[in-house]
Image (cartoon, rainbow, N blue to C red; front, side):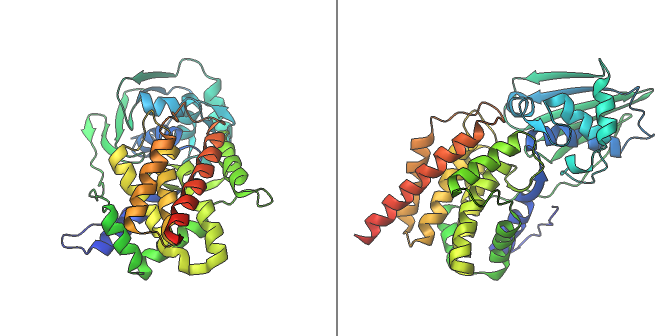
Amino acid sequence: MSVTIEPGMSEAKRVAALLKREIVEVVGCTEPASCAYAFRTLARHWPAPLDLPTVRAHLWVSRDVYRNASTAVVPFLHQRGVRAAVAAGLTTSAAGFNVFPRMNVAAARALLRRRGWLEVQPLRKRGIWVRAELIQDAHRGEVLIADRHDRVARLVVDGREIKLKNPAPITPPGLDAIVRLARRRMPALETIAEDFLLKQAEGTRRLSLEKRVARLVRERMCGHRHAIMTITGSGNHGIFLGLPLRELYREQGRSVLPAVLLALLVQLRLSQERSRISDDCGLAIKAAPALAAGLAFARGATLPQIRGVIRSVTRKLRSLECQGARASCGAKAEKSLRLVMDEVNAVTAKSHD
């Protein structure tokens, strides 16, 4: 979502703009979606109708993007890997980042049956970095996506640079400010937090919470068509935060929204401090500490206790590594959620002694 940031904007309005920008509904894993979005951006600005039987494409991606894009299953096509993602991007009619639901499946499958139309080169770069090139007849175009899954840093078609407006960056507040904002009970911010909860996919409710989170994460990695509310570019993080907090919301109603807001903002802060994508499992070093902070806050934890539970959860889950967008992410989510609940119980038990 594009949000205009004006000079002198209040802290609350800046935080609201940041949340609206970072909470996005997406079907499918966001790394293959980013590859698809790169080619969709080129297709939207192409000077002539694309002729898929003659098009040629090149894709250069960072090692972090390639790790996840090459292992996740693309929804609707039920195929794993970058090639399927690019085919989806060239055959979708989506206007924004949520590319997969609007693809022409038959056209994508026909393109995948061609040989030699796509070259993919992983690079040693880190973080989110996707460069796509499209060639057809005398036309040539290039797009670069960097820093965010949906941020077009450069777009050139037939030698002419096309300027796309990117929103100004917003630095997430620190933990002290996050706690202060949560305690102020601002309707504008709590409405965003509530919307995140209510729109999040819930999975199979007959399962325990831990099993439900694990299954939904696993199914998403395997190409199921769940529409997920992502946060900081990650659907798995959105699931991990959303389902436990939704259960709390179901029990306590809107009184829990300050804790939801706090968890979302801690997630934003940790993603800014620890990078959006890396060799570390993002559930372990971002979503799990953020959820622990929100749950602890909901139980009355103090600021030092919240800092402590963030550090403790991070330290105990640090050994979890990212091995790609695989079904095994579900087991990591289950393990992380159990540890979060144990840590929150320990912290809040001490505060009541």
